[in-house]
Length: 382
Image 1 (cartoon, rainbow, N blue to C red):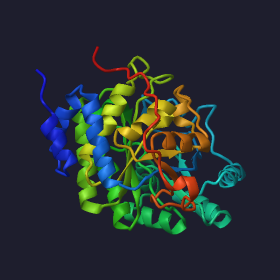
Image 2: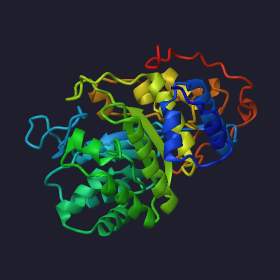
Image 3: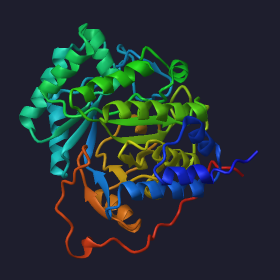
């Protein structure tokens, strides 16, 4: 039986807070256009400025050794696998140099759960990077890694985070979030942090004055209700700490994984879920598009489904590409996507502060109408 979601969309657009049941009813709907229009209205209310943003950074995976077993991951290697690596320091620093040369001011640094590297190794790594590139923000170490550091070092979470922050850690990514429901996490991974501990890494980091991003990887074994539960856990923590700068969702990429039998979610499901995240997460200021998994056109269309940010140029990316998904954009392409959507492109940092010069001349006004050609929306009802 179909359910009229119009009153719920109107509530969200007006600034009302959706309940979990209301969020689920919207997510269960197939009215993609109405949901997208509502999410766009919320994004425009929260971001009335004529700008939409992007970032220039690089994903540096300092190691692929991992003691956890994640059925969805094509990147990790067991610690004794012949393809295991830890990046030499000079190679890592060269990657940062190349990022800076291309206008980047941040690196996203993540790895697996390495079984032997001590906490002091990570502190030395951070200090080394900051000594060479003091102005580069290190957006580093996912909550599973941080939780792993506490086990390796046998030290409390707060102390581990304080030490990493003192060594140069600037902000925390939301990697390893997957779905923040223990049933799902237990079904697709072993030896990895569960929901409460994932959230607590962010909580303590926020209490120390840090900022981080929330994420969700969906389209595998979770139910729609569990997607909403994930949103709700993020929203609850944001109510408590206010430390999340943004939320990013993307679809599971099954190729080359132990879950390759699961059909990939299409653009329909991606856009609808992102739009519902914008409607539900009323206290998270920014929603980021995921062109890395969806490709240029769907990533651009996401700007009409609640996103106010096109994400990163991502000079290097290894995890998603290991699953066979390879999309590449240039800075010019990202700026063109934003401009075609009717906005002025601005470069920002991880804290969503503009870091480019204010627009002048023709750049002062966005286009009056969008010139986006919509992609084929697959995965919806026949």
